[in-house]
Structures are given as C-alpha cells and as structure tokens.
Image 1: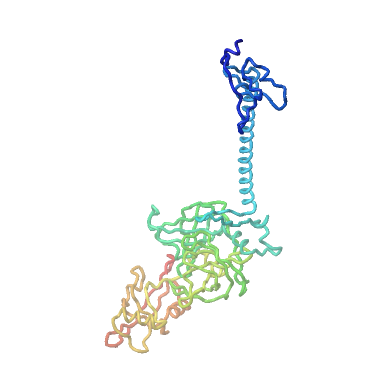
Image 2: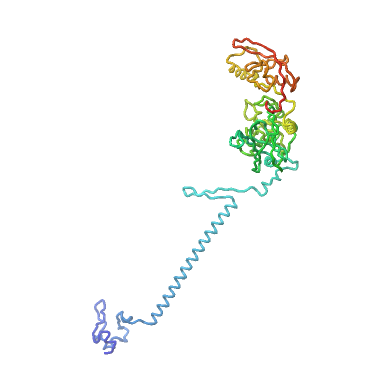
Length: 469
C-alpha cells in the first residue's frame, strides 16, 4: 500500500454507484478496490470508469498554475473595474460639461434673442421675448430732417438741457419748501426766465440743472402783473435755449411742453397749437397777456417751462396761472414775443419802468359770483344797478392811504368815467396818468338800508419797482 492508498483509506472496499434502475455497473462483481486497477481503468466503452467528484480536486492540495491563473484573472478583473469606473466618470463629466454648455448657450441665446424663461409656481415655463431697437435707432442725428425739423424725440433732446427746476424755500437752511416750478436758460452765464408766481420775493431759491448740478439763485427782477421773472445763477457754460418767433406759429402745428410737474424733472408732453394770440387773463392778477393755446398738458409744476416747436425753438413760457376756469384740457403759454421785452427790461432795470401802484386791494364786480362775495363781506345786499370797485384793504406806503377812502367802500369813477372791473380801472388810469401823477376819483359808501354816500378824493400814483401787483 503506497502513501496515496494510505491517504484514501488503505484497503477499504467501495462499490461503484448503482444505476438508478438498480443495475450494477460491475458485471463481473469483482471488488472495486484500489488493488483492482483493472476495474478502475476498464477499457471497455460500455463500462467507463466512475470517479467521485473529489478525485478531480484533491483536498488539501492547490494547483500552482491555478493559483497563478486566478491571480491573473483577478488582476484583469480589477483592471476592468477601474476602466469601467474611469469610463463612467468620463461619461459623467462629458454630460456635466454638455449641460453647462447647453445652459450657457441657452442664456446667450436668450440674451441675443431677447427672451427670458420664467418658471411658474406650477412648474410651467413661460417665455418672455424682448429685443433691442434696430442699430442706430437711438441716434439723435437721425431725428432731424434736411430742413432742420425734429421729430418729437429730437425736439425734446434739443431743449432738454435748457430746462431747469426751481425750488423755493422759506428759510436760508432750505428746510421749508414753499413750492417748485420750471425755468428756461437764456444764456451761458446763467440768466433764467420763469414765472413770477414760482418765486417768493422774500424767499430762497435753488436751481437744479439737467446734469444734476444745484445752484443758489437770486432774483434779478420780477413782474407779477405779467407773471414774468428773471433769475441769475453763478454757473458758466450752460446750455441756453433758442428762442423762436411766436408770430410764425401756426394753428395745428405740433409742439411739446417741457417742465417739472410735481417735481418730475424734464417731463415732456406733446400736442398741437390749438389757437394763437389768445388774450388770456391771469387768475392771480386779472391782467391779460397774449398766449398760445395748446392741448399739451401744462400742470402747476410746468409753470415757467417752455413750449417748444419742432425746430427746437422756445415759442412760449408756460404758465398755470393763465388757464381757463371753466374748461379742462386747455393749456396756455405766454408768447415769447410778448415775454421777450419784459425779460430784457427786467435784466436791464430789475423792474418794468412806468408801472404805477394805486395801493389798494380790491374785488371788482365783473360777474355775479364776485358781487356775491362782496355782499357776503358786507353782510347785506347791494342796491340794484350799483357798481364799483370794492376796497378790502389799502397799503400804508401809498398816498391813497391818506385819503377819505376806507376798506368796505367803493371807487365808482376815475376822472368822471365809471369803473366796475379791473380792466376798466387800469385802462382808464393808464390812458391818462402815470407814476407820480395825481388822479381824481369818485368814491361811495353803501349803507345796510341801501342808501349811498358819495365823496370825491385825489391820490398820487406811486412808481412800482417792486414787481408786486
């Protein structure tokens, strides 16, 4: 018995496995032992040798070649896994880069095409499209034709830097704002025209130019009668407006109004010339001025601003004081030809020469509503067919204060000519008298029982250099 026989159990006899049908695979019934090798290696094709499975893999022994092959196979498997992982990472990286590129490309495309994507709360995407004007569309040089006529955009751009905002304060610290208005730059040295009612003779004024600069301003002259005033600032190199000829204005002509309504700087409204040379009475003084009527919006903050034609020329000074008391949508601007001599005299003298002051505060009897106001102040009705100028106060620095005339009395005649309205009073005096002249007047006191006591006075006209009216 060799070593191998000892390992497998020596002389132990084993029977080959039987057929499932019970037939033996060892027909000669010889013992199936290690000592019977012929039984193990029977060359007969019908009787192949039968081995147990463990005979192919002896327990306790390892084939060196198999171990080497297994190591090689494991190394290959490891390499394969590494390659797969690298391939996966490469694919992932490519996908990430592709997403970034496509995302960036989409953003660029959205910018170029002017579209943007917005995700709603429900996850739905909404695309909003936006695009720029064609190239050169904002070139102001293209807004003027060969004849020098502007489009609305061109006219607004031509006059924009010449319009200023004026702020009036009650105190030197500029904390108590009284109001705002507009003005038009007349020359590079800082002379500015505006409306007299925008200013306060005892106030403090700042001028805000289109470039954001702020200047302290002083009043050169003001005339409340015409509602024209001139300011001066210390700025240099300013952009003066070009004044036009208001006698050339045509009905139906396109215009723009530029000013600062409600403090909204350089607001532009457009319209047409509705009428020319309208004799419009100022709400504050009752004085009439020639005005251009327009349907362009003119609000209180526009006062002192410009009415501009399509050649970029200022043809009127807008004023909210020259308005219609009965209708909306009517705007008026003092014609530049009417305003220009007043502006020039204010710059030269600081006031309008030849103006006189009577020294009275009055209510005329131009209509029934004013008569009712007078009767309310008196506390009783006036006699029928009685007319005159009702006096509410007198100025102490004027000669008329020293006469018999008192508040609640009436001036009924000037040098024998009946007067009952402001125009009648002013025209009658100015036709025959000037500053320094003595004027005869008939006055009256009306009693509650309707009786009228008349008396005569004479008063000297005072020169008016204050600009007040």
